Length: 83
Image 1: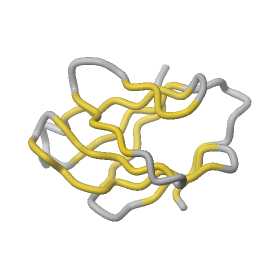
Image 2 (image 1 turned 120 degrees about the horizontal axis):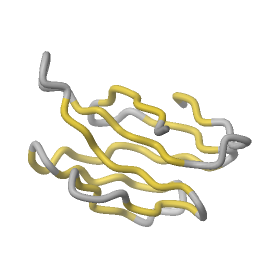
Image 3 (image 1 turned 180 degrees about the horizontal axis):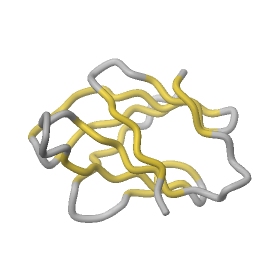
């Protein structure tokens, strides 16, 4: 089961010892994430995107409020938190 966290532009998340930030919301179905090393990823609602080894992120709608929801799929041993 994926971890689901609400997000907005500028929010950062720590994935283990690495950081990923919401750089922009490009459309209701796509966002751009920026990793701590400067690499960017276009993440959409159609499929999960691997942003770190064994860490996948996708987006999902929140139909009640239309806010961005990030879906994290990673090993259970990896700590994921807001940063």
